Image 1: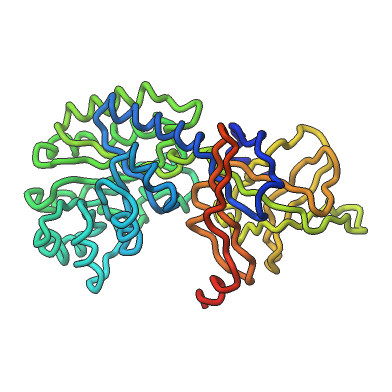
Image 2: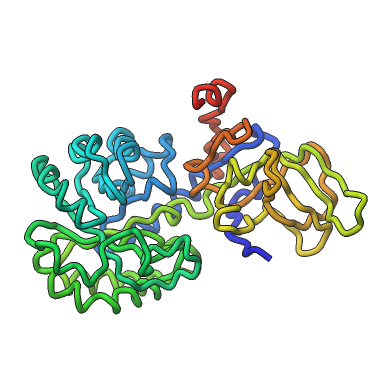
Length: 389
């Protein structure tokens, strides 16, 4: 059975699911602000700088709000860097596995930090970055991670991301301003401490030549059980040990449990084969709307799912046989027109949607759970599908 991820409904039990179009992503601004306040307190107490990872969440309507709390954005290439500079405030830190020469000057012109992935990239583009007076860094692979899924482990020996920590001696440290490493994915504090323990004997001696150290993302800081006090002590300690500005780049933690995906039951039936489960077809597509359900894979939590009830397989509207969201329990068998909501669907959803099979993309709405105000900020049409092709 796939692991169920997410599951804190926060205030979404109060939302009238029938008051919105379907399918529809809904972001609760109150829940988002709650997360941002946690991150802001962390900044104040530790002097860490926090950048939102646009690869996880980059809703433009919320850019001004996010910018009030955080220090800027980390981007992964030209388009995200443009987006950061145009809509968000603060610093822009750009890392790419490989910068293209045709794009690099524009990236350098609008980034504050540029982080290189390899010795080749560093040698090819360092002088261009410095021509624009930009700070440069190198991504390091610590060769240590506690991530068990190889698809999300960027620090194994076969990773294409970062130079091996043992190769740091091949870099002229007088030419770089900082180092970056990333070894976490939806994890609590201890794996970060363990990673640092593996590499500090290499990093601390060279830190006197550095301005900053970027600890990457994957920190589940806003989760209820996150060991926040330990993180605060750790950040203060390494800041003192290295005399460097410390950065972190959370994506998921910024919007954790602040969004849902509303859908509607389009058909439901029980195959005549007694071995088959009850099936409900929804207008939510796993492959088109929430591809991490298939890629990770995982089972998203369902709002108000009972502990006991009828077992129902929820499937999407595309022709892909594997367009399955998961198996869920229902108090009553779902009927055509019933609404459902999947929890924790802000991060890695809107940024990953596709028009596969011509499936319509979910609308996007902002909701204030204090006032019940709803603003549908985006609805997609055939023209969007047509223009993409």
